[in-house]
Image 1 (cartoon, rainbow, N blue to C red):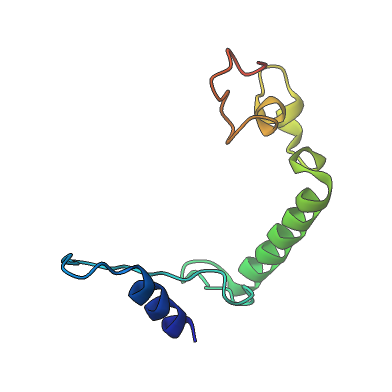
Image 2: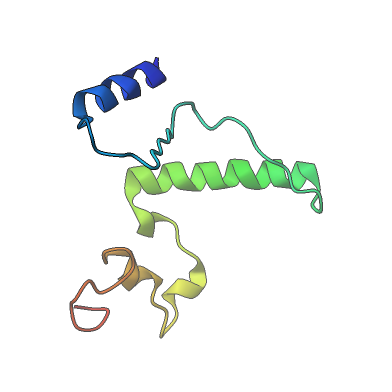
Length: 100
């Protein structure tokens, strides 16, 4: 089904006489991420627990924002995580300084 759609788009946009050397197509996020690739050097049960914790943290941050859950060290003087959370990609985005 996806291949048919890609071929249709290609045929609609192809200009005869123009050579095409490479054409790349990729698909992502087609299925729910329900699998976990285990690390050979760690205890599987710990990895499963860590994965569940990461999932829970992601859900809380999606609902309440990144600053809803932060490490306590992020509240110390000189820490930047709280300030950076409100910036574009964690960067000042052209503004002067982190506060800006």
